[in-house]
Image 1 (cartoon, rainbow, N blue to C red):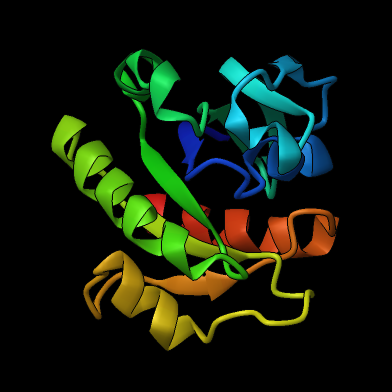
Image 2 (cartoon, rainbow, N blue to C red):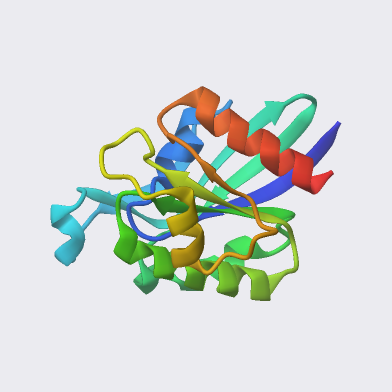
Length: 170
């Protein structure tokens, strides 16, 4: 049995909290608070410190740490990345302006520790989703990095992403 620390990051409203809640075997520790900035029209709550969940897949335990998406809470990013084994960057595939923000997060998290990562296009079940090639281009992701689709509200979809992460970690 192996265990891994995986950080789930991404821009504001990319689906990090939902991703972890959907798959966690334990009740998720969440630090959601009411949005008080101009983003309150997008959603009512946002993560201010972290989300924490745990899941076991094929005898591998993943400790999932979700980061805040708003840059005003960016002090948590480096703290949460300590001792991470890999990270997942969630991208809202319906929000092309956020793709470059996701690319910035890839560069930042890659600078903390040299670990494997995935770029995950969330919300692919919605109308107006970008193609994976457009997400790769928008996030400035090289060809050797996996960019894959996901629906963070569907357990089977989140499971596929995490199985891909396990494959990278082994």
